[in-house]
Image 1 (cartoon, rainbow, N blue to C red):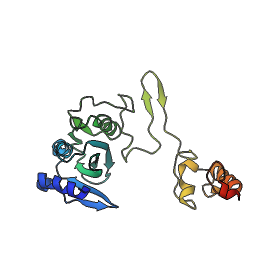
Image 2 (cartoon, rainbow, N blue to C red):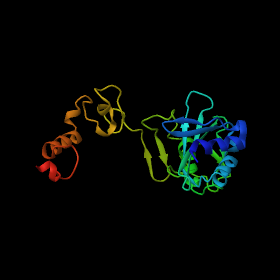
Image 3 (cartoon, rainbow, N blue to C red):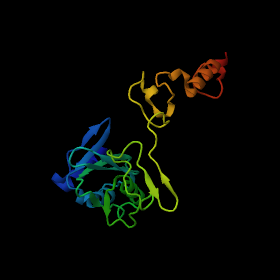
Image 4 (cartoon, rainbow, N blue to C red):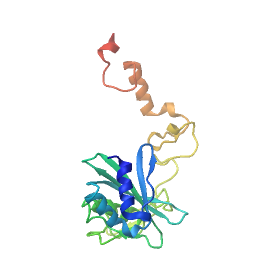
Length: 225
């Protein structure tokens, strides 16, 4: 049975709540119209359609539009080796939907991370608390209205954090530059156009001159000859 056929069974069970399956680059997705039904839909997907593995739950901030949040459930079945995504939307004013920890225990940490980074609440989660930031942290770092440099924050009894400098920082992407490589924060150099002076590119050049290719520990016997 294909992923599309399994998605059609999901639609047959829930009717207009589930959209027609959409395919993009060989991957199948459906949209759930009512986020309050997500636990029931996921329970059916696991028990009846054999999607026994919750690969991930991700969240998207549709900043500037309504509904603001899109929650994406990535499902996989080991028996049929098919994958399906279930997308559902949640408005900013509500910012909550049911937990699916009763369906897959692994949803626990996925939902906690979304709560921590986006501020979305998962109702009846058994332990909904921050997983990366400290409990009293007042912001949600992955929201699109959160500044890229961060915000000054007091860490109780520990320290005070300052916003990261935006000029010349190694992890800040700068618009412009001669190429995507020049803009990539992990290979930033003082002059974003001067990518040839970057140490990583220099190392690749040295390796290529030695081995005849830009990667590898040693040349193969064929390359030696």
